[in-house]
Image (cartoon, rainbow, N blue to C red; front, side):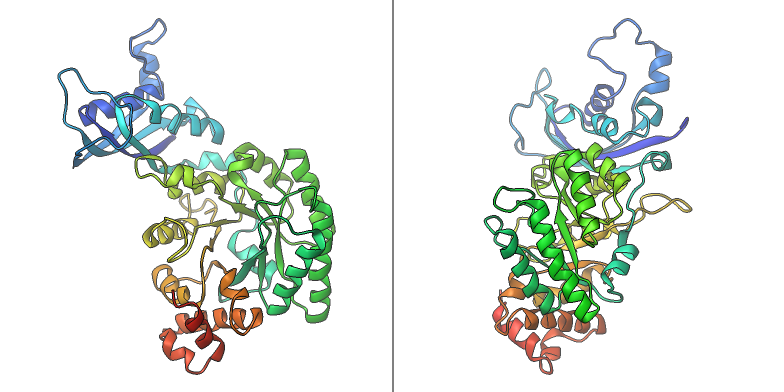
Length: 421
């Protein structure tokens, strides 16, 4: 652990000199105080102080992005910058909760800043001594889903709440008979009184088992087990006993330590749902990027996570979506350490029209492509919706323009007409 350092990159906005602002960040999150106190020796600072690795001036800013910021005595010119800090790992050890306290902590509240956002983190391999990372990742998920050399085509249970266990199972029946590979449970429904978890999962997995017995295809269902830690472990065991092949947890709802416990217990892939991430990622002036965020959860043990989708219904740009997906598939540590890659899940308003631009931007089929309306609202019905997605992806990989491919694929042609945008 000695000599190993954690590195974090930030975007900042401040009226103070950028070098001074960076030093303030480093001091606040390690050994510094606004006045030196007893015990704050030079030796302590040398051993434990956060270090400013670089400061890049990004130019002047007309107005503060966030309220409540201060000005230096005599005023100052507000500027944006990119700051890279590092910490000795011995300050907090390989602990994700304490890492988060160090690299985020009180920084966003400091009066010197009118904007501060965590952009990226680089962690030493010592974290792998404590955290297991994904158990299944891309390869294990493909094996359980039985899908290779193309995206895993998925869909979502809707409406969000109100369905009984039997009604949920009926939606699953429609989707498995349509030919999907993966179904995501509703993130808003874990164990509500009108749809208890055990009853819902028993009903759903009975449908999936019956379909597998008839066809040989076992569809992966990500059962939402979000809850208290003891509840989640028991729910995982119920899914496993019923023959399920995936569980889902809302990451922001349960927290990193709970995810670590679930990962240590789990015998199934963990579908990490990022609902609530917009609180961290939407503002360019505060929070953290998904590039940084997903690294924490990969170490904690998720196997898949959502990245939005091309031309999605939310506020995220296509460039941000692709950057997020690419990072999920990029190793976190240098060889020979495990890469901790996880499968990105494209969702949110996806249809056959997004296959080609998604593949062109990402250059891989190692992803889940989840469509709700893009399957269920197809003019020919859900089975035609699934076929249209397969046809669109086959064309994208082959380099055939989607309009050209549609001439020989009626399901795809109908999808392009129905989902014209």
